[in-house]
Image 1: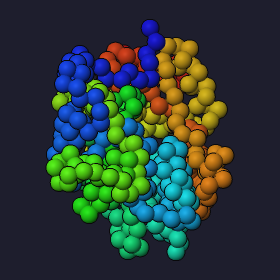
Image 2 (image 1 turned 180 degrees about the vertical axis):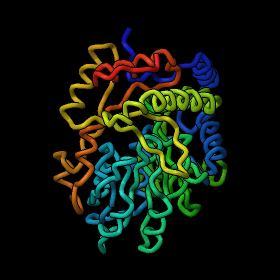
Image 3 (image 1 turned 30 degrees about the vertical axis):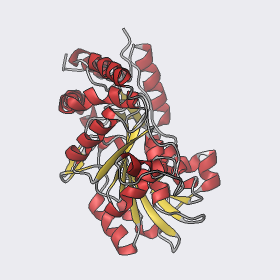
Length: 382
């Protein structure tokens, strides 16, 4: 049987929650299960305010609006990320300024940020790749000294921390994803953590199509009206009903994934010690969430051959992002600052192995055996 790359979490309890929504007529956004999910995240993440959104892309767009960007303003971010990270700011007329990544974590190289700052810079957008945190102390220090806002793209960061702080709660705004490929899933979905108290009310207005409807629902005003820009950034409560049972056993899901991650690491370490592949690096102070496990091949040709070999042997493995600065829109809307020393080189080498809740030890060993076979190295772990 083929081992898939991903299987979204699925629970019978979710169906019961969806039925409960229909029974009580809670189909709209900002209803029963949405409130439960948001409260859970606020308490677990120690966040000021967390709001569910239809996607992480929507959360990023909200963050870009809250940053009050004007056309021509600049946002520093890594090129090794999904296009939504840049799109959110381009939609506000801002210019993405891409900088190189660190080859160990695939995150933005914090040492290169300051040199990319110009009088037009307004925001630093970091991406916590694979649920491994960027070097946030350095990022926040730069932001404070230059009076810049920080947006955390923590799409892959649910349940991960940096020096004990939840990813998404360190910068001014944090954006999470609950896409079907993430550790916790609404099918499509996301959330924004608003970490500045004075911007929470405006964030609520943006999410409600630019109206003060949230205040009306709380009984703070007797009618609501259009007061600001905004859009439909509310997911249906049916999506929240799908998510809620997963949050109730979030630790169990996290521990299950971590077991698979550490088994991959243990079994593949001998191959890495032989210099045939490279494995992920988790810096001290970072507690990751096993969102993904990757190996790095020698180059793009070897990577392509490895993925094809694994597929032929019943294992679905994938590569990840094509660097944004090399894309048509990236060249049109942004620019790369400095030298692309690692972004393209490392993205060309990376292969993501199957990772999901419920992945069995037997299947992990089967994946690893196929990797060893590709390299013609006899394994000793069976």
